[in-house]
Length: 322
Image 1 (spheres, helix red, strand yellow):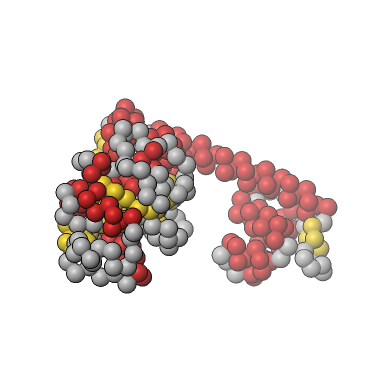
Image 2 (image 1 turned 90 degrees about the vertical axis):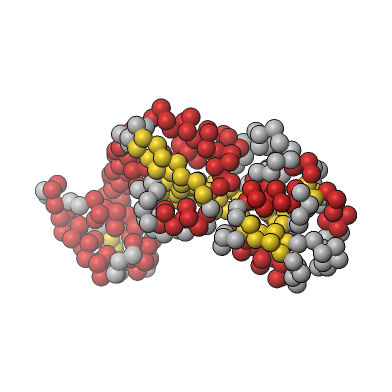
């Protein structure tokens, strides 16, 4: 047997067949045809000079040689994985420049910590911030190496980690607190309080509009402003009400002016991701993910309805109205 004839992919295919007990199941998981899987295993048996499977049984059963090859193949694949991770770490240490995109809200709380962490490691760091649609467009077009934003799409080659899930809140000035405590379909129409949202087609705007449609509330007057900070400042000044998640609310100048009420709607959640399309940056993404958790002191997937109690910003919202 010539070791040069043995391909790592053949071992991986054999492992899948052994674990799934059929060529069909293995082919579906590997994304190739059943005949290709069968031929790969047959060629491996030919090169090793002995059968690895008892083909008359259902599910497939390993021969004695097959069990030994499976044990060695798993170790071989694991060593290959560790080698790749080691190479990725080495490449990560060699990264000299980085372009990172942050949504407006993330930038407000995370950019300083991010720069302190990365500047000593890099020769060049470019941090781009802005409205979510622009960050996503630049990321999809390859203009950013890493993005931290909501709505980042998933695809097979993309490394994408969920780092935060937030509930949404009804938010208004304290002077309208009575209406907020009794928030119902016509609560705000009675005081003709305008609904305030973004101009841009962001996730927050779409989800807020969807919620309003579900409860049948159509404000007689509404305003569309440029960004999150403008929206929350307008609400602080009593110019209207809005629907936002906690991190957005904390961008205001004086949150003591606000009253909030959590919307208990499982379909109304905001998910924040960190992602890259460059495999060599996976270790960097994991480091930044850990830095994010350290900064905000909560775990991935935590339903962040009381984020203001854990944020290390010194800012507090009024007691939640539940």
